[in-house]
Structures are given as C-alpha cells and as structure tokens.
Length: 220
Image (cartoon, rainbow, N blue to C red; front, side, top):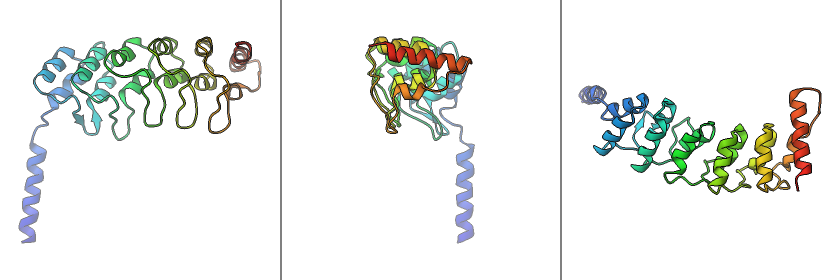
C-alpha cells in the first residue's frame, strides 16, 4: 500500500513539473521589456500579480531595466497590480523606483495611483528613500506631488536626516528651502545636525559636512 501511494505521489510530482508555466510567455515579455506584448497578454487575461518563483510581476518588470519599463509598469498598475507586493528577498517596486534617478520610473507609479506618501514595511517613505540616495530630481518631483516632508520611518529618520547622514548637499538644501523640520529626532535621540557633525578634516567628506552644517545652522 505504501509503495503504491509513493508511486502515485511521484507520478503526480512528475506530471506537475512537466506542465508548462501558464505565465511563462508573460514573464518573458516582462523580461524583454516588450510593452506591446505585455499589454496584449494583460488584455487576454494574464494576471498582473502573477509571480515567477516568489517575484511579483512589477518587480520583474523593474529588474528588466528596459526603455519601455515605465510603460510596462503603467500597464501593470492599470490592470490591478499590487504596488506593495514583494518577493521573499526583494523590495517593493515603488521603493526600487525611488532608489533610481530616472523621473520616468517614479512618475509611472505616481501617475497610476501610488501616493507620493507611499511607505514600505519599515515605514520608509518614497521621499525618505530618494533623499537617502541623493536623487535631486526625484526628491523635487515627490515634493511637487505632495509628499510629507517630515515623514518618519519606524526608527524616526526623516528625509532630511537621511540626506544629512549621506551628505547629499543639494537634497539638504531643497528640503530646508521647503521648510523641513530640523528639530525632529529619531528614536536614538539624533537630529539632522547631530547626524552630520563630525571632524571637518581637509577631505571632500569633511568639506561636505561643513557645508551641510552651515545650511542647517543658517536657514531659518
């Protein structure tokens, strides 16, 4: 009886493994950056939330990094893709977009229902992420679209703190011009100023720290 059961189980597994993935063509189109084909497949019933292994379609499309990636992101979102979907070891697609300098990527999300104040599971905002990476144009776009300038993540870091800590002078300047709160502290008791203060040795890092401190202390 046990031998017969084992045989049936192995046969079932073999049959399952031999079946083609119904989404294989869809995933190939995403990886190739073929927006026309992706759109056609979505119209034919392909699931915008389909996963290849654990990776959601939006993340697969983003990883492809093709010229048509923004158009594919748009098509997926309009078809109902979940922007917050993540794989077992990946970030959600809006966060990936905020980590890049290209406006077309973040615009694809902002123009299709993803709020400028979207946050990931760690409560990191798009503005906080873009500020940490120093992407001036993306920071400006998010502010234009109404992103909360003082949004804090689950450790209390603000976009201004992120920009200061990573020594992104122009982002610090923009945030201060837009009246970012310099007095807020994170859960460790650190402020934007304390995160950037240090030795002002004659290196580029030292000069940058000095410049940011001057901005923080000079802007009212």
